Image (cartoon, rainbow over all chains, first blue to last red; front, top):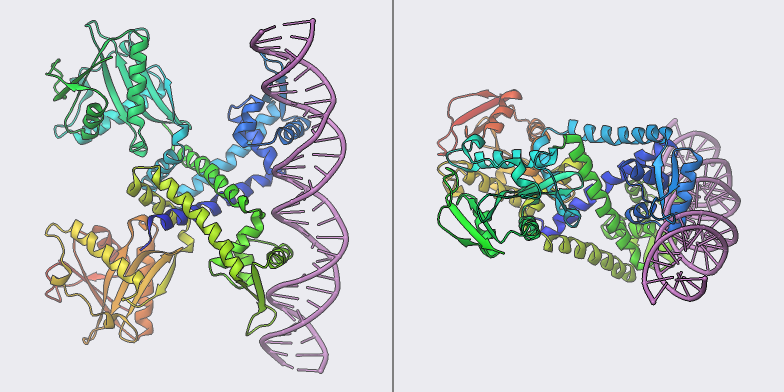
Length: 290
Length: 290
DNA sequence: CACGATATCTGACTAAAGTCAGATATATGC
DNA sequence: GCATATATCTGACTTTAGTCAGATATCGTG
């Protein structure tokens, strides 16, 4: 019925009016939108004035005036940057924090109302994740993190759940050779998480071993972010970390049920080798010399 | 990792910046956004000035001025309404049409670029349909249409494809007792399509027969619109049409593989009856007295 | 045809957003 | 230490959006 372009445009129309409603709800606190946006940016952790200006796309004159108006309301305080006194750092005062929380409550209520009015919650949330990831692809950043961090554990949990779904015989972490977290922390190894606006979208582990090689483990990309080249980026980052650690040979094991993964390895310079461990789950083994 | 509310808010953030980019791209034609919006509304077929004002949520004074500025540019012409000279009708001049097409080209290009940059096209489009339908739920309107119209045929095609997927033995329309289109047109019957901003989201047929009952056929709801109560609305509309046509007894057949449908019928006053036809596909039969 | 209701228009205003040319203070490289 | 670059601020503007109180013309009804 509708061609792809029309479908995208229908989505744009639907979303434009929803966004408009969201904006006007912010007007209820007696502050123009510009000032409200700056206050919220500061509340969300942006403190560097130049950073806020870039983020909101404001002229420096306008930005300066908006900061002043928030200062007059005693919602924020600005100080000079420690290392560079030209730059200014903005922080919420206690009153500012209260006001910020009030804006947060408005946003949360709106999100809650939206969810409450729709029975397809999970499908809707998955669709939203997918679109948010697609729109924010360029904003997806890779961070080296401790494998025991909340973000990493979330990724690993999703990874295990997916293996359980996709392996005919299911998957039980305890039966697999679960890498010790310490092996995936510098200087032995590394663990990298892809984050997009607060949501972890993928991970990969570089596990140092006592043998002459290190292993790549736990490569996972969220369903919402597949097809965006994130797996490749994660692998590149893991290889980069390996080089930094002076590792010359990488190995990994995988299962032929994970077809996309096998393709990715083959296309990025890995060569298949015979089984090199006795883990019951993998049936495909690769190595790559750096 | 993220609770549902945070996921909705992440989506809102992603989409807000995308919408902002779309808006600013409209500024490139040297016309303020307000005037561009009015021009586009007229281009998309809205001609009644009051209608445009409601649609865009504008004050009558502002609206009047925007119309004037477009007239000064010779992009539109306004005339009095034939039946009511107080109302004004706005139409694009040839120059206005050219300008409108330029805006359309911007929107189309943007949609195309978005699609071109993402390899998960179908998943992305399905997610967009789902969200647009959810956001526009209140805007989904039921229209009585000819079952041979493009919209109706699109729905039926999707319906047959879904049956083929869900029936173990597949589905072939030719083997089914395909209702004659004429039986689903007044005064014998009716065919109703649910439309949301140009996209058909569901359908239902009321098929007149020579027996003492009429039949409900081809109830279908697009995956993007499930869980929004559209099936119920379509059934209500079909029953309403039946009452208008003086029909006292309705029957329908379905298959137990379509669990949601069976549930809907049971919950809305239908009672199971023995097989009343020899169609090979259905295995469940219902009737309802009006 | 008088009356109130309705649709649009006009004039006079305000608020918000955005622009631009300097001014000021600080940092950096030679 | 000096020239140049950078970050922010200030003042003087313009444009856009929006509001509101009437004015004007037309409609529907009795």
